[in-house]
Each structure stands twice: as structure tokens, then as C-alpha cells.
Length: 270
Ligand SMILES: Nc1ncnc2c1ncn2[C@@H]1O[C@H](COP(=O)(O)OP(=O)(O)OP(=O)(O)O)[C@@H](O)[C@H]1O
Ligand SMILES: [Mg+2]
Image (cartoon, rainbow, N blue to C red; front, side, top):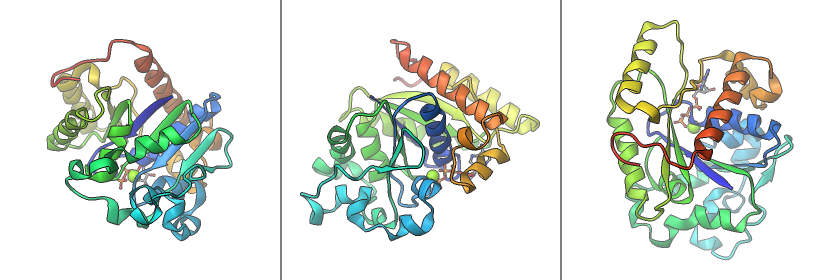
């Protein structure tokens, strides 16, 4: 089982969209995929089940159960919901998670291992994707403690690299609890290669981080939005679109990076 989390404290950079559509490509490839929604916004959950159902879920049916002492002995084995897509299950989240997402997550004691323990209790999947909120609080922290690799989606306009540095620092800190955690890399998302500004940002990012930037880029494409609005990963909605092809390419590159025994290194460590 490979556990990947999607992290960036920048909002709207494509974390949820990438996880949602990547799950479709993986499932179409025959993999059993679990999406863990670790974001109180519940974007991943709503992508599959719609806002009405997701917002009506009580805390004990969502990821919030892990952090709520009232449910210490709750049965977690039924937290993962089946979607209509063969091979894709989702542990949902909604607003009930918000009050548990606190700054200074490293003071959380045993709760820091909550997501990891959940994954140990659930049946095995081939791939687990954890969608995180746009901050580095409890939800992102417990996701990193549970993960093998961190995928960092970055839009090609994020000129303040402070955000990226903060993610790298957080990965370094999370390794004190999870020494096997590594960065899978930066994934350029929402790329419009007709824009000079996007092309020059990509060049700068590759110059700064080398192999730590994935070769694959995710284009800005309406097919991603339309498929999401229809609650279908683009692989199932428009399999012949450029968006679906880019997502399959991303899947293949992730596979290749995971298969290479030597974790890729770049300036700044793991
Ligand atoms: N490659 C893309 N092409 C077109 N639209 C996209 C693409 N990626 C994301 N979007 C759209 O942009 C919006 C924000 O994307 P998304 O929700 O994935 O970002 P996020 O990083 O998860 O945001 P947040 O930090 O709030 O969780 C969504 O409406 C999504 O459909
Ligand atoms: Mg999101």
C-alpha cells in the first residue's frame, strides 16, 4: 500500500482536483484506491457524493471521529464509503472536522498518529490519497505522519516561494514521527503553456528544484471542472480528453518515481 498526501498551504492550487481525477486514472488501471478527505471543506467528498449528503453526515461518519474523544471506541471499519466507481472508496469529511484542525499540531500527543492508525485498521488498498486543507495544521500534519510520500501541487504563478519552503520545513518536522516520509515532488498544476509567465515560472521552478519537479504538468482544462461538476473523475467522464491523458501520464510518472528505489534528492534534503 502506498500512501500519498497532497499538501500546499496555498488555496485553490489543485490539491483536491488532482486527487479526485488521479483516483479515477488509478481505478481505471485496476488499482484499489482510498481517498481520505482530510479537509473540513470536504471538496473530495462533495466531488463524489454532492454537498447535501456530505454536509448532513454526523461527525462519527466522517474523519472527525478520529479526533473527537466522545467517540473513542467507535467502530471505524465502516468509515470508508463506496463510490459508484469500482475501486474507489472515500473516507469523507465535512465542517465537523474544522474544530479539530489546530495550529501547532505537533503538540497533539497520540492524536498525531490518528490517520495512520485508521489506515492500519481499514482493509488494504493499493493506493491511499489524502487530500489536505490549505494550511499546515492538524489535518495536514496527521496526513504527513500517515504517508509515504508528499505530493506538492503548485500553480505556476506562486512567486512567493515562502509557501513551498514552509511545506518543505513541515515535511522535515513530520519525519521526526515518520522517518520514512519523503517528498514525491512538486507538481505544476493549472498550467497554460500559452502564457509566457507560466513558462518562465516553470523554468524557474525546475532550475531551483531540479528532479524534485515532476516532468508531468497538469494543464488548466475545462474538462477537469466539467467532470467534477458531474461528480465523475475525468477518466470516466471524458477519457479521450487531454485532461484525462495528462492524468494518466501523472499516474505513470508517480508509479515510476515510487518504483525507483533511490528517493530523488534535491537541494534541501529528502
Ligand atoms: N487543472 C485544472 N484545470 C481547470 N480547473 C482546475 C484545475 N485544477 C483545479 N481546478 C479548479 O480550480 C478550483 C480549485 O481547485 P481545487 O479545489 O482542486 O484546489 P485546492 O488546492 O484543493 O483548494 P483548497 O486549498 O481550497 O482545498 C476548483 O474549482 C477546480 O475544479
Ligand atoms: Mg482542496
